[in-house]
Length: 223
Image (cartoon, rainbow, N blue to C red; front, side):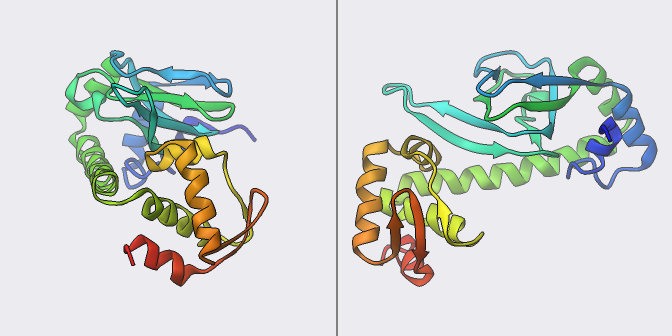
């Protein structure tokens, strides 16, 4: 059965606790947008046309290092998450790029209509401000990791998070891991081998066959 706009909105954290009439008001201005795998959804510096809410698929939000052009992932968005909502509030351009990781569908709230609803229904604004606060906390954590942690610590944290979902698991490409943790593929390869040799993980090709969670946590903590 095909999703209705209200089905997406009531599952989206900023809108989930809204009254039914608020949800219906949002649904009335919503339009579907589709992106093929690898398609650019928007670029840093673009003026926003509205707010995306993920309905199916996934996308990554990333920035480019100014001197090297290296990609650094800020977030991966999945269904029922808003995408780069800051410009919908401050009127500025997008601060990062967005790319569909697979065939992706979003529910799109056109900006002018969305602005009118925020003025008419301030509860919407309060909910979205809370969402922005949570995202800001996550980004502060990312900045701290990039500033104060070595690559092996960031890689260990990435593996620890993956292992918590179940072992064994297949590793992403080194380039994807590098973008996620803010480094280059060569250092990912080198530090995977380092963790394997130390017994923190056991590699079988590109699969982590075993993970020592205590050892990985010690690496994260710099021990």
